[in-house]
Image (tube, rainbow, N blue to C red; front, side, top):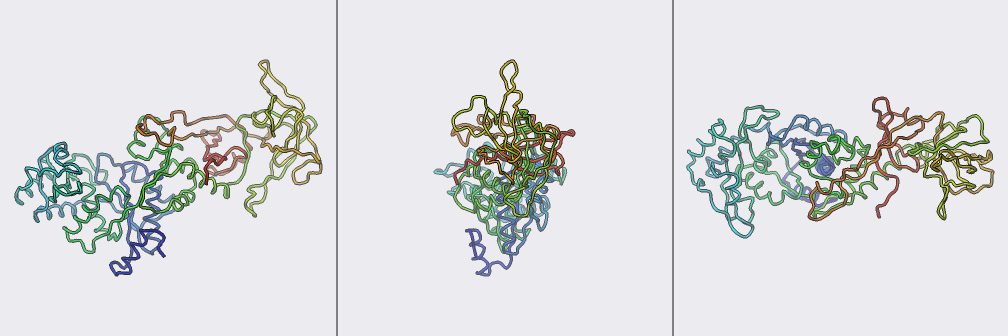
Length: 539
């Protein structure tokens, strides 16, 4: 049963006998790293093919060698596999360059393409507007023989970049500007990452796109909505080159998220200018960045599923994405404790040490418990103690009671301060009969504090992140004006040894702090924030 308009089109085509099997393709250009917006395209292209027992190719649109690199090809394949998708074939536009060129000569021979000497600026000036038709090129009526001769000279490298181009001969008065004799080949003397210097002319995407789809056997070319106005050109190419069956292009709304840079061009600028640590910086919306941050692949796919497949453009709040990630981690992440801003707490009437049971994840019935070491000296968060507490303060204060997570209830008796009045140590009393799971003390303690043992804890570097963009949207500003240059914060913390012993890359819920991923750099434990613990999104 169809769940969205794309699937309805497919089911109609199957029912009408237009196709017998489904073939899609995921078509990134290898000019940068994929970002979360591409995850939706993957979800649709790979997911649709899977639902209908079809096939989905990985198709690299490598028609612009000046911006494309093998590094980006490798990164794209790595990201797709990380999300759990598998392609049927790995295909490149450059695989078909000879055929695409031959088709261009066919269009010339059929009188449907011509070599134009106008510069790119002159072509733009004669394109017309939405209300006024364009002006025909003075070179539009060259003979077939002259066009073939010039086009072959273009291929031979006889002309400089921009000196000539090949244009489709369609209709300069068309209400669709994309049909006003569009450029289908341009001269570009640049080394290609796969074909080297074999070519100095390259097809434009709008021309190569339908040809590559046809040659791959694509039945449904699923594109983002900005290609809707280009669909008549897509169809024109297929019809005039005699494609049968001709692939069907269907457009869907792209994924837009607030507070994120969703432009590969600007993401590249951030990397090149050193505003971030690289394409995989945890603040970046790239899939490499999200993976490095610790966002689970399954959470991203779940988010794409919830966002749905629509035709209408919309923008999703970053808080919703974070809520989806938080929901996933809340169910799957084991619990642990770390103190970001440590304050020493001494339990004056406690001697020795003991093991206490700590729940791994209370939401999972079979998760069980693990042992943590409790002792006389522990660290708590500095913010969890106050000499001058506000009303309804449920954390630790002099004469007040709190429970230490999975341990005992304590009472604060004395605060030790330095010459400037800063608290350096809190001395407490514990109540042996208040042990967690077997409390017979009768003491009511509203606050529960996380902690680590001074003797057994390890040093850790905690990294917390803000959004790269300061605001959700600000009309009239560009990304450079909205960028948040103070979006990474580093703290020196104390963590329980369990975090240092865990497999690196494991996601944890740090009690009362947030969700963090473990890493190691130069032998140092790194706790990198995935998403905050607090959910501000109004579901």
